[in-house]
Image (cartoon, rainbow, N blue to C red):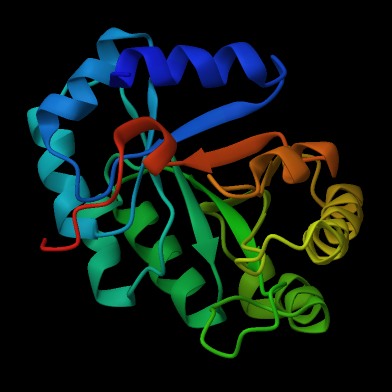
Length: 220
């Protein structure tokens, strides 16, 4: 089954209100173009320079989503065009995004990344940290960042009860976030191995890579 067929199969399965981010990191432009020609417009990348290169090469009506941990010194490469940053995980990063967005005379939508998996190696705020960040004076003074929702990555497990618990935690945070930020419409949770559970728990944005493009190219 090719990329076009895989995409169509997924789109036929998921509800209309769920936005599908095709995770194209490490994938060549030809693969992205095939998905684009099949109607896909939202693509997810996790390396800033690679995202910049693909943006320059590929059709300009693609919405580029940055879905990985974003280093502060790399923000400048995506600030002119990125549609949504899924991984706002610190005040220091927020300051850099705000600075670069101001230089580009734009407001960059971002998702608050919540740490829900329990894995020490993962990035993101816990709930008290996120609330403290959002109410802090340095953040409230930023004019070039829009809080567009929440994102989290669950533990990589087949245990549905664990996934439900972690996704439920994020959904509850997201509902609280929306009371403070009406622009926080996106709940980005769910990847290839767990997106069905995520949708059941309230996700309206999923990030799928291998189920569309095949296994990731790890040599890049």
